[in-house]
Length: 131
Image (cartoon, rainbow, N blue to C red; front, top):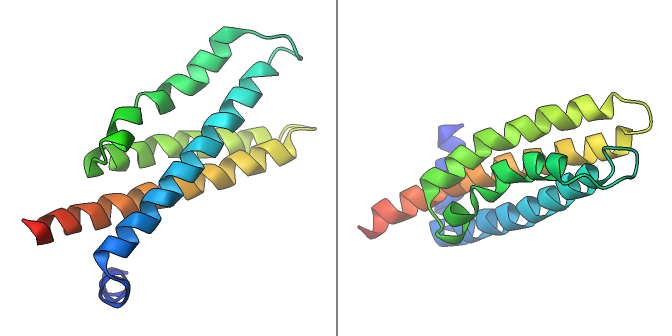
């Protein structure tokens, strides 16, 4: 795996890979945030309750400074938090009538995980190369 990543870096360049992984993080973060807010609105059978929305959104929002500041360490931690949303999506997918939303949340959270881990690797290597 390490050799494959190093070949990928040599073939495409760190700048391009860092940019692409950041785009994946931004897109998947936004989509996951929308999915979680959407699910929070309908957790009480269609009635709005702000507590579940805050409980689901807060872990993601706490990482906004790291995403905006482009910090590799914050992206690495966000990758681990995204696994909680993956687990939640898989569990949601097993409920009757919630399969599509659960699978969608699981896929988007895995995209966020992949993007965050890639960004953390490429960004830290890019910073070491520039130093």
